[in-house]
Image 1 (spheres, one colour):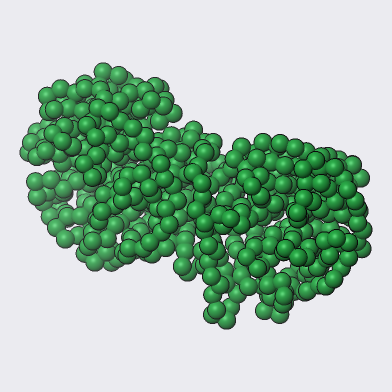
Image 2 (cartoon, one colour):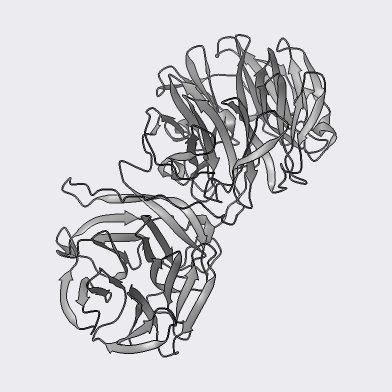
Length: 638
């Protein structure tokens, strides 16, 4: 069917993510109920002589009917009122925000193409495209009360408390009397003197008109008195890979929760509605974070900065590079880097670094392929510059494809393995040279294919596993025997892995991978009884790849992988109430996450994080630092 305002599909392919030590995926999840939102003030306008540009961060994702060709959107009392278009498919709808369920619908006659709507009092007014007719309904029953005519096309409509404001696809906004729909004024919308055409769906927000501009990913913030564009909101990449393979059309649809200050946006035939927050470009979305390396250290094949650690006054960074081989870099000042000539041969990745007994240990992953020895290895250096191997060929078992994590615990160096054949193993060494296996393969369960995390806490060694068959497990050892303390995905088989274990405030925390509902955080007071501290990816089910936990300066930091919108960083002072301190992959959705807890490090009293790049990204892994304390309103509580 030929659709007006030509169909604009999003040609985005869903590309499998780089094979990383802890098995990333592009899985999708559904939303979870959230606590009542806090009031979020909009960012103030800048006054630098240029039109301010705003970026965004995704706060929440809600389901949206992918068959709804959204033309108008209004929010009130936990409900959305929506107008949909297309001849023969146009409608007026009442929709539950949380579930996306259509609670009430009135279909328009096939001769009408539905457009913008406005809600005022107990009435809803709906425009039509080329029919020059506005339809007035009772808000509760959707019964038709009256019709009005107008000479132009009908595109967007909103209400400022006194007047209706209408767009017709030009650069003009029309002011109309809500009782008669008679025109009582108009204003030409301009940006630095140039007209802004194709004004589409409208929403009146805090004294401004927000307008979708058709065929763009931008929303104009407009002063309705002068017509001047006071700011541009750039929503490029919002739907992103979540819309891959779907017949999604252009961005269109703005709604505002005046009581809570929540801003919602969606598009025509989009499967999701997004709650977003705005930040001026230059002030966000990095919010105090600084990138301290050139992308990929100048090599785009360094697809991830997989591990960070400090040793002898330097910060070390290891990479994954399946093309030219893994690299090791170091810096003494946090931003000037030098490559370390390790002598690692045929090495695809540095999977971990650990400081133990005055030496630096590196876990390496072989390239693989014909003629290349298989099985992970461990190298060590006394000065960080000259290296020699101490473990080769997976402790003599080629099926130990990777060795990670490395963990200095209770005066001993521990190492976990990835072994998809017989199950993961745990090894330890008292001198770094002689190693003994201290746990049966997979703890007797071959489905425990990898060790995701190791930690020492209250006299025990704890191990979290990858188990994509029955769900992640947690085991603990007194140094002699291992006992299962959690199995079956910690009660949820969708928890495929425990990627981080961290002591914080006399409790032990465990972070999971959950591709159904988002990562979960569990905690225990005694190591045996565990409770969920937070679930649902901290309010975003796309935060599905549990990344790393890092206690620092009175906070527990969590870096969560998000293969759709970029990694997020959160922190908590009590384990239950969280604030977000890093957004949308540090401003680049291609930063899909950390490789795990090992890619977080403290250096010079700053937190550093290494990133994993989306395979579709043309650049390499990055290193970011959080050099200052900032205050953020709590977003998610228990």
